[in-house]
Length: 93
Image (cartoon, rainbow, N blue to C red; front, side, top):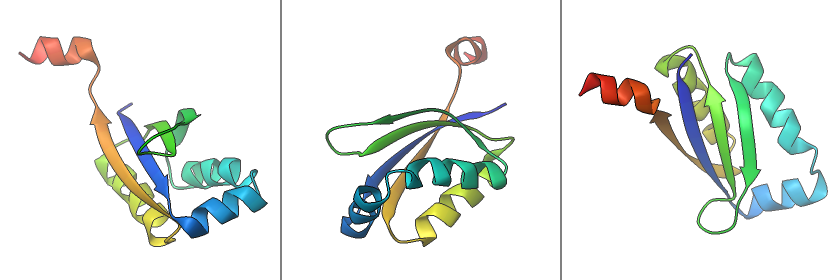
C-alpha cells in the first residue's frame, strides 16, 4: 500500500484544541481511518512541524481527500509527501 509522510503545523486555534483535549490527536487518527487511510506511526516534533505522521492509503486520491478534509478544518497546515520505498526507487533507476 502506498505510504505518505504528512507534516503538520498547528495554528493557535489548533494548539489550544490540543492543550484542552490531548485525546483529540487520537480522534483525528480515527477520522483518517474513516476516510480510508491508516496512521502507521506518529511523532510530536520540535521545530517547523508539530507532528510527523506516516500514513498508508490505497492511492493518491484517498490521501488527497484526507489532506483536504484535515486542511479544511482550519486548525493546522499540512504538507503531504509520497514516500517511495528505497528498493522500489533503486529498481526504477
